[in-house]
Image 1 (tube, helix red, strand yellow):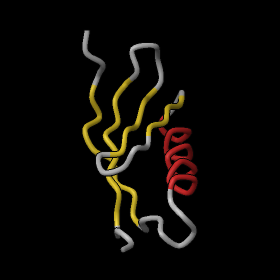
Image 2 (cartoon, one colour):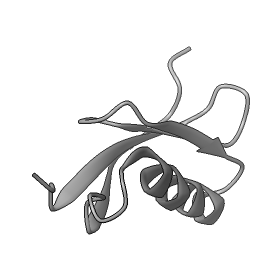
Image 3 (cartoon, one colour):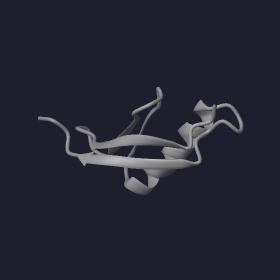
Image 4 (cartoon, one colour):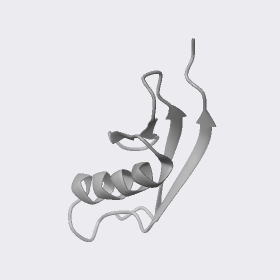
Length: 68
């Protein structure tokens, strides 16, 4: 069954840039900027799911700074 949305938790990377991790699938990606991260997330979602099975909505939550 196709899920209608997927949610990513976004954090600032300790090395610089941003990381995004899906809460309901094994998807992780990173990028130097938020626009690059959004593009990387879309690409990762397309690669993870079979054609026609990808969620139609991508949501982001918890823009957190890295733990120190």
